[in-house]
Structure formats: structure tokens, C-alpha cells
Image 1 (cartoon, rainbow, N blue to C red):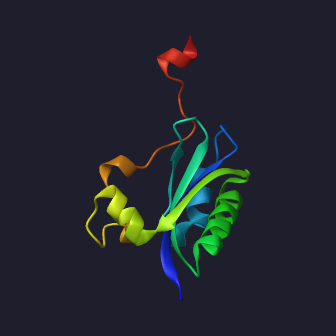
Image 2 (image 1 turned 90 degrees about the vertical axis):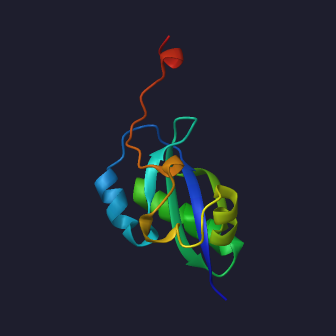
Image 3 (image 1 turned 90 degrees about the horizontal axis):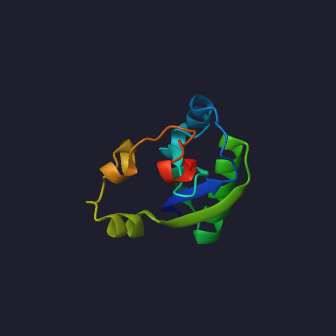
Length: 117
């Protein structure tokens, strides 16, 4: 049985990636592309998979294909669990509608004042 999963994958690049090309490649997966708290490129996506192991492998492969960088961290959970953790109403994950905490970011991340010193 296939289940909907949500994945957030960090990839080993702090360089600018081609956002238009990455979004094009991930168009079927409702992508959000941004920068992780540690400054890595980060891809959030939703997709169907046959189980958690399949979802983890698929998420890492999709992120690598879209960004050209190896995955270094991956958080994957069922859409049901994602909705519960985010406090969303069912149906809000699909169709590209996300809460304000999951806004669209642009790369590269600018250093904070603390990092610049």
C-alpha cells in the first residue's frame, strides 16, 4: 500500500543552486527550496511511497537530482504525522499550501551579523 510522505532533505552545498531548474525537476512533489538553519540547501517535498525506507531513499535521490549535491540530512514522515506535528488541518499540505513557517526561501543564505564578524 502506498502512503503520502513529507520529506525535508539538506544537501551538501552552500552555493547557489538553479532554483528554476530544481523547481522544474521537483514540480510533481510540491517543492519548497530554501536554506537550513546550518546554511545548507534544503528541499521539502511530498510524494507517495510504499514505506518509510522507500520514502527516505526516494527523498534523498530526488534532492540530489534537483540540486546536484549529496544529501547530508533527511527527515521523512507520513503526511498524517507531518500534519499533526505542524498543527495543520488535513488537506493543507497538498496543493502547495503551507503554513507561514514553511515559506519559500531563496538561496544562497546571507550570513547573519554574528557570522559576519
